[in-house]
Image (cartoon, rainbow over all chains, first blue to last red; front, side):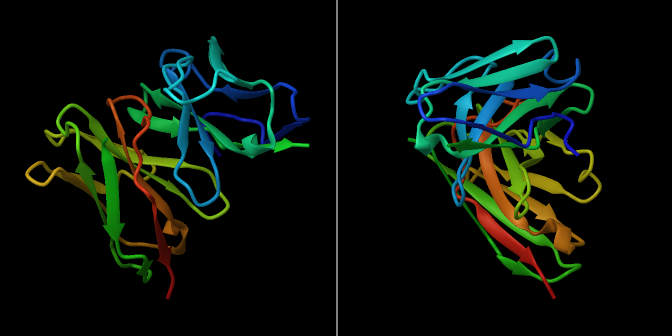
Length: 110
Length: 118
């Protein structure tokens, strides 16, 4: 069971918006930056969001990140079929002195 | 452009030691932390640990008693050793780059499937 809690699955229609939540504690999300990754089968994770809300170059602005207290959210607007993937949040845990991933959320674009 | 290339044995037996190496080509080696992450089949990502060029390490508490991450700055390489393997260690293992005390960023290795089976 992951310390960072994500919903197992979310779904939405093409063109719609979806949000994925990531719940943690003051030791991780509450006091450290949050990262979001997209994971496709057979490929390495791709960084979507770093430092809670920043996008690497090449990541479209359809992807955005935010945080409130000990919870973080990844929002994806203008959903495309190519967005179907597993999404993972991650954060450093200051108490454990270790990195943590959420359990992952499978996005289905209906 | 920085590239991470990893290699190691893909089929191992229970009780053996997993040994993987990740080489960093291009860019600075000393300005970053270097991580290992794994994903068992059908399961989520698991952070294993990280190291910097001085050999300063952090490990996942659940693996700390077994895992060793080391660095060879003369070759711009870092390695993972995991002894006493069981089937639960079967996973795709990735190396990645970060800034330390945070999650890895945009540079990842290609991944190595390590299967533990008798």
